[in-house]
Image 1 (tube, one colour):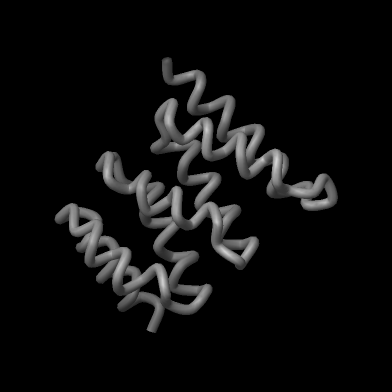
Image 2 (image 1 turned 90 degrees about the vertical axis):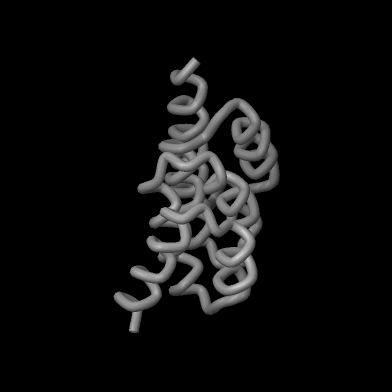
Length: 112
C-alpha cells in the first residue's frame, strides 16, 4: 500500500500539484504523512516548502522529524524562521528532533 501512496505523492510533487497534495495527504494517516515529508525532501520544486511547513506542526514526531530533515535540503531563509519557532517550542528531552532542527537551520543558512 505504501509503495502506491509513495508513487502518487511523487507524481503530484513532480507536477507541482500542491493543493492536491495538501487535500489528499495532509489529513492522511501518519505513515502517509511521513512518506509525504520524505518525498518533499527529494524535490527541488519550491512548492514543497509550503507542504513541509505544515508538516512541521504535525502531531506525530516522526513526521515532524522527516519534515525538518527535508527542509534542511529544500529550505530557504523563510523556513529558517519556521525551524527556529519549532525549536523554541520543542522540549529539550526530544533530543533527535532538537538535533535535526539545529542541523537543518545550519544547512539552510549555509546556502546563502
